[in-house]
Figure 1 (cartoon, rainbow, N blue to C red):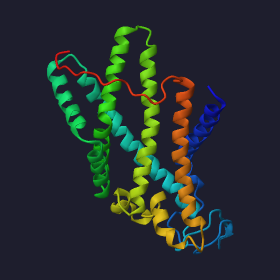
Figure 2 (figure 1 turned 180 degrees about the vertical axis):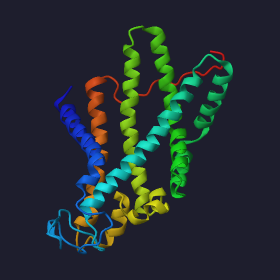
Figure 3 (figure 1 turned 180 degrees about the horizontal axis):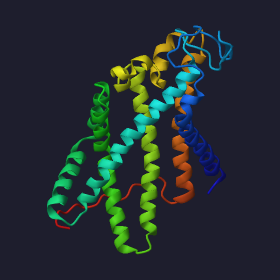
Figure 4 (figure 1 turned 135 degrees about the vertical axis):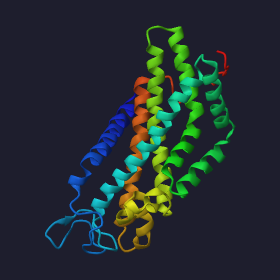
Length: 280
């Protein structure tokens, strides 16, 4: 493993662990409620009226930017985990069924996989975008599942073959590790898609009445709402952009570092596509 992989593995691990800690302790770290009106358009480090400090300043409405970034990280984390969870929780049983020996189950699962394979990637991502546009997070997750399902079935088939060919489980562990690394990269993709649509004020966080008080409290939403003030206070839109880029870069580098450490010969290669036979 090269020094390059070690450095970025450490950096990615710090970012991922830090993101999780922020989610766990966001409520305690918030100096002010995200929707509380304080002083509008203040520079980072400005003292608030109650004697506190606005570490990242405040937006045009006077809301604390630091508290809103913490909430944005929390909302992004849960949205990504929910979508990624649907991909694996729903996808793995279908992948198992597609390689099972029970003919009716295998035939039904292979039918679902055939539908997923028949959808061109561009159309699949349009479905993802549309489902996010209408504010339906479950529909977004199902669309993400359709995009990911063929790869999951291939990996599951590779796992079954490895278990049949070697009893030590080393190859099986390798496939499971590939899944985990792929999950990190997929989380970065989902996070980017989510925040892109938040920038255009689309998606469930902005459509749901449960989040009326926190509508712009997402990375993309904060950038979209404060971009007009970039000339007066550059830190307003740049701080959520920086936070999101840090998360995305950290996820990618953590995945690349793990791959370089544990799978030096893999380099992102996917397992070969299996041949699905209902009676196998």
